[in-house]
Length: 103
Figure 1 (cartoon, rainbow, N blue to C red):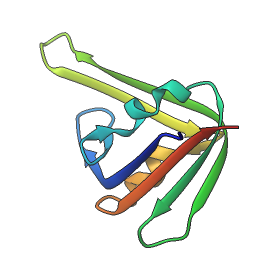
Figure 2: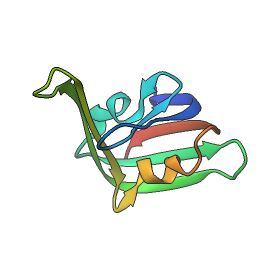
Figure 3: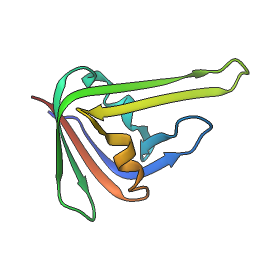
């Protein structure tokens, strides 16, 4: 079974990096187990054709406390040299379906 995530793209704007969610799920956190592996990602936005990306996944997600007691988040999600978070930030509010599989 290939991990699939479907829902509305939501950007949580923060001081520092923004966090990208699909509904209530942090995208980078959901796919973190693919970090360092060769993958194929199929991305289907409601208003466009299927997009496919292949390459080594570089995924990072961190949530914790900063020195002042506040929450701190960081996330990155690359497939090869394509910044997936940046790509999806342009589609905020759209419905997306993302499927990732090992190749």
